[in-house]
Image (cartoon, rainbow over all chains, first blue to last red):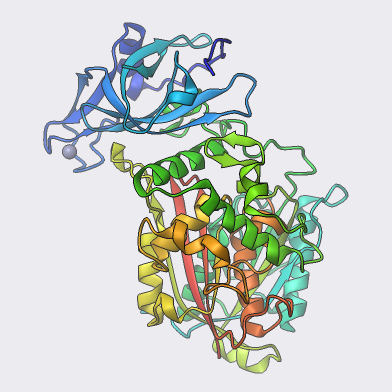
Length: 131
Length: 390
Ligand SMILES: [Zn+2]
């Protein structure tokens, strides 16, 4: 079942600490926060590292490559959609959707690549499609 | 300091309603409080500690303390979703052990059915100031069911767990629910019924999900000297533990729950092991919730939950680990979309020998109650208690 019907996506609520993430999304880039103290990347992005509590975190651009960690096709929705966790090549797993594909052929650990989908009055959302 | 042996559950009550169109939220809280105090043989004026969570109307405990006319010297409104009330039993024991109160009242109530809430299938924003996670989750459409479904999907991928194995959990609950006159779903179902029910969010079918019900319940936890004066069987708290499992900064692991930590801690405090448990109340928002918690609590090896629950192993009188003998959230009751309190209630009934004769476990002297609140696939609060009949 392909998601041919358009799903209306709500705009994310933007806060000062995540403005840069959404500005980048508007330019088609996915940012990942990386800590220069412990070297770990994390998601969702925070100014203070959730691993070592250092405030030496910086924005890095993700490659846009990843694999599906898990997914579930929400059949009981006006337009069915595929909820997912994608493991980014940079390490962190992020909540996202898998789009523009046959939902019945999705598999865990399948390679995917980054796409952006417009929201209702806000910046676009990073999503993934089979690579 | 340990809470082992420092507190007893003296009173319990479960509201018989499953659809509360004609009752207010505060009224249900008060009705269950009255029921549990009467069950214990205590009065409102004996209560000196009050515990509630986010289902109570008003700011924390204040509105309900006023509404019920309580005079308390200890309150706790910790909210970890549906696991809150299991956690409250532990907190009540801590407060009693520290001398902060002697008679602790815990209440739960809700009316999601009367209010027509789309509990499991519509993404919800909490409103107000967004939680830090919300912008990175809510726009994608996370619902209760699809986030639990992702745990099931990964479990199947890593361990070969099947829909038929998950279905056995609903089948066992339905075998128990047929004897509960208040259960919402009283019909015994088969594995085929479950796997042939409509798919809600892969791989969870309609019958993998719990019921949506109105109602509530209450628990009275007392100091040993109070328990000694009451006429009810003495149900002693041996161990309690709580944990918050998160996405760990992106190191998400959907294959286990916080029960891995709360189970180990509660068993250690109690000085018993999973094999000693005669009856288990296991949080059952979905079939997958039960399977993962059984593994994490140590009833079977990680990844072997599917084989463990199959072939009726959770059915009282049939299998090795009777679970949720009231029909649980899967068939009987999941009041306010929060199933932790009713888990404690059926464990106490089993230990008292007051479960339905068709499901009563023989010589039931040791039981566990475990709760998972929030979302198994996003972030959740786990709480475990281990109880003994003295
Ligand atoms: Zn760091």
